[in-house]
Structures are given as C-alpha cells and as structure tokens.
Image 1 (tube, rainbow, N blue to C red):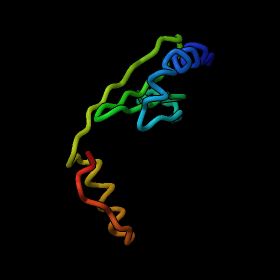
Image 2 (image 1 turned 30 degrees about the vertical axis):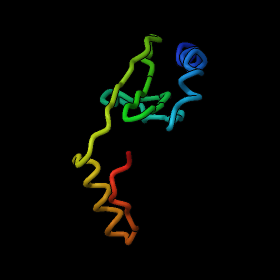
Image 3 (image 1 turned 135 degrees about the horizontal axis):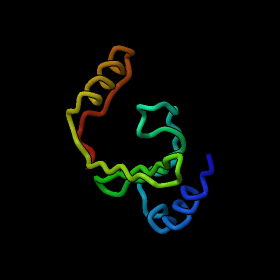
Length: 94
C-alpha cells in the first residue's frame, strides 16, 4: 500500500506533533475487522487523543478519543499488572 497520504498528513500536522504530550507511529495488524490496521499516526493533547489511519484507497480515517476512567479495558489491564506484582499509581493524572 502507498502510504503517501499518511506521510503527508504527518508532515502537515508537525505543529500539533510538537505540542503533543503523547505522539507516535503505531502499527495495527491488517485484517478486515481492525479499524487501526496498518500504519497510524497517534497524538494526544490534554485529555484528547486522535489516531489517523489510512484505507487501502488512500483516504484517511481519524479516530477521536477523550480521556475516560474505569473502562473495561483499563480495569483488565490493571488486574493483569497487579497479578504480576507491578505497582500502580492510582491517583488521577490531570
């Protein structure tokens, strides 16, 4: 797949990339059910996060997230880490 649109998106988002508290290039396994399949650009500012991926036809998809607490995934991750004896900071991060 030609990732030129995603590469161009990363370049034009440079000002936000510099401001971001969290940023990265991620890769999701390609399969028909994964909305994050292939390369992604992810960045977060404040309590908001976006992840941009690309469809095979070159169109970009923007996934938007807001900070949430006590989610099923978060609870599962915490339990797995606790079972392995890892210490968690449970104070809210603001």
